[in-house]
Image (cartoon, rainbow, N blue to C red; front, side, top):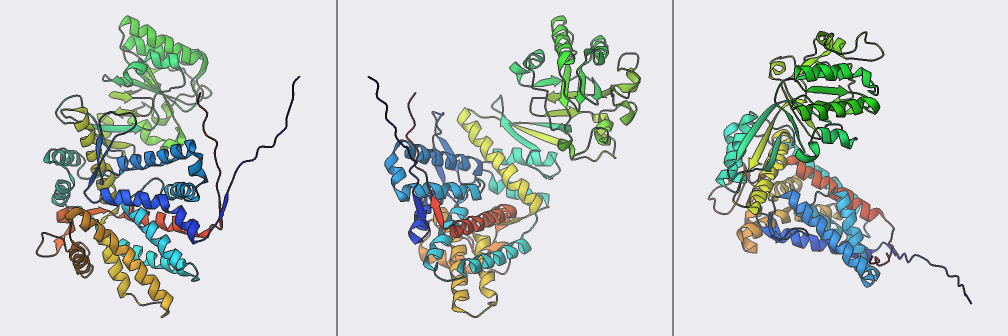
Length: 558
């Protein structure tokens, strides 16, 4: 006899109403992360073994990319531990600690630094002591804005090539790293406006090498929606399509579906033994795509170098400029009649073919393309001084060599961090002293400003904030030089009183040291972003009246 029973299953969702204890629990994991980062920051390193690698990696505090990976894995481990141990989920400190850490990462957009954890912990600990005081947080954040305005007003730009070389020498781990970085910047005339101009990749030899490409960076890659077409280009094996010989260029306006619209062009390209670069602002599908695939395979069997490379055109990739209005691209492709050479099945009188070649086909010197992006090279088009487009750029590829995979990965991460994280943003937006020096000077500036009101609360807020802003330099001196507490306090005080923003009192220097000469500088926008993110996080935590947490079931083993 079958028996049935009914039951009601409810989700266990504890609700924590905000008070000092709840806020302290929310910060528990952030305090742990802060302790970890402060122990390995400011020229210290950590040995870390990723999940899928056998050899441990040496991660330095300057390598913010890998440090971010370490932090994400730290979060994942906490999540896994709580998923398999329900008692940890029931523990308010453990559960709220994970929630607080996730909120912290979300506010910081995964850009986690020792400064961001330090300021967040200090601000909330201070807020807990003065939570009953109305307006304490608002006054603190207002004072922090004053400090930020001081940093903006005093950031400095490094333009002199000798100064840039000197900075590279100080930031690089080895002379070999410094040499290849300076060579890369010389190729760009020391101009690095974005972080995608210099690429740092694994080399195939023990020696370093540099490849310089001057051309058009096309944001979209080879059409990747059809597997047979990709196989016809052999891109599934090589991952890269390279055409080193001059190619034909055809720009197609509309959806390419019918084979008769493209077959004459394919025959013309095959007969001329030239590849065809087909740029289409619509989709390529149906019989037309099948004809292109068949033609590529046929040419491969016959040893004909002709192949058709399809690139989709999206307005958003070109500053919302339609293909009919993109004069720079048309000029770069050297279409014979400019915009009039764009083929449209609806409006063009002729179909592109050998008979109408002089009306439609442009030329391209060489092509390098993947499914993600494409580089087009046309030296003759680059000679035109009127061609001024952000897609026209010099791309430098650094092929990093070494005696082992471990060495190559370490050098590659270090060089990429210096060039694309520090130099790129610093040369574009300006530098400020690092290691907490700039914040110490901002604290001194705050101490000299008049109070908006002569209340005890205003004095308390400023005193607490000044202490927060001076501690990062104190921590840096401890980690980097292992100085005593009194020696650190003296150096911080002397640095705050230094006349010039660039200069600081550092061990080993009889006089005030130029931070540019010592390499102790960082991009201004990185610090400014960190301060903004910390302010957002603190405001969010203090504005919540309750935190509702969920107890997840233990994952079932398959």
